[in-house]
Amino acid sequence: MMDDDFRRLPSVEKLLAEEHIRELEAVYPHSLVVSVVRQYLAERRHLISLGDSCPSIDEMAVSIYNRVQSLGQPSLRPVINATGIILHTNLGRAPLSQEAIMAMDVVAKGYSNLEFELDSGRRGSRQVHVEHILCQLSGAESALVVNNNASGVLLALGALAKGKEVIVSRGQAVEIGGGFRIPEVMRQGGAHLVEVGTTNCTYLADYERAITPHTAALLRVHSSNFKIVGFSQSVALEELIQLGQRYNLPVLDDLGSGCLLDTTEFGLDPEPMVQASIAAGVNLAFFSGDKLLGGTQAGVIVGERSLIGKLAKHPLARAVRIDKVRLAGLAVTLLHYLKGDAEGKIPVWRMISTPLDTIERRAKEWAQSLEDLAEVVEGESMVGGGSLPGSTLPTRLVAIKGQNITLRLAQNLRHHQPPIIGRIEKNTLLLDPRTVFPEEDEVVLQALVNGVGRMRNAKQAGL
Image 1 (tube, one colour):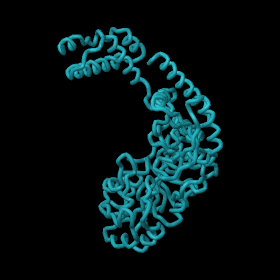
Image 2 (cartoon, helix red, strand yellow; image 1 turned 180 degrees about the vertical axis):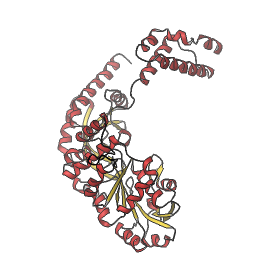
Image 3 (tube, rainbow, N blue to C red; image 1 turned 60 degrees about the horizontal axis):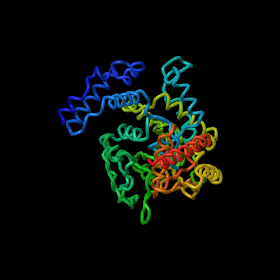
Image 4 (cartoon, rainbow, N blue to C red; image 1 turned 135 degrees about the horizontal axis):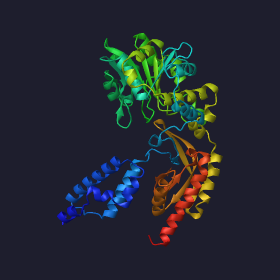
């Protein structure tokens, strides 16, 4: 039987003669189509050897057609985030302001003065486009921007502590997500990790006892993606800075989410602010550009000019530098803070500050489109992205119950153009308007109506 299946496999030439495949060659290079056909036939041979049967030549032609078409289309595309998680890492974290998007578009279209001084006509530094703004916002002497926060910490450890010791509280030797752990980052930077204290309790004396002639720095890592509750003790940043000054050791502050606004004004738990760390006297502070800052993916380092200078001259600085497009978006995002319009312009803060009655009105409109299948319920939105763990915002959710309805409608919404992503809890599909732009409401409404319509038609047809 297996031999018969092998014999039924067509030749490359026979598949190329199929109508579906000939349609592809009108759009795609012949070499690409041939390559995909050969790959497909090799896969079929392997599957037949495992016991699969050989499909018909029409089925094979359709499979090859779909495969080539998928190769010719970008797989990265916009989605509508109805999960209620504002900084959703899997969905791209922070959406950008319109001004930031325009700046990125302009720079991407052609040449720019990325590393060129227009006044002197000489080569310049890409850092000048953001450094003065960052210094103004944070109060730091100098600043450096790299491609993400982890690489910023890696660069600092390589430049300041290679072959030496860096002291950190055991409760702060965290994993920042995706398997990236502070101890691993430190090892890659060439620094030797010295953990002090216990998971829940670390005292200033623990740090002081660990200081040796080989100590290069004291490191604080903000636990931005988890909380320790109950019996716990940590060292205040001011105390750590005083200890560092006493032993002439720099204090490095990994803030993670990069907050420039007071989160308590929006009903959230307090989040460490960049300008507060600099005012307290940290030597270097590190934070992300695409979390609470609300900009492009970037790692921002602010602090003492002499230390920033060492980082900028380190060979690794070139390997982790930021590109021109993200730099343009970051610069405009920072300008929103400088001009005082971050809350109204940056989507992350617009979503955080959206009034509850506005969310409820929109949720009711969505639920009405589903008639008796949905209701509006109280719920909570999360900031997400490794920021403000355990801190939520009250919201109103559109709840669609019933296991069969929930799973099928969620799938229909994911296959919509653009895809709409909700969250499922206890056999209930939940959609949160907080993380959906108001201008996307009509798309969501139409998708809900179409999705339910397809489900009802399928039910009537007995599918």
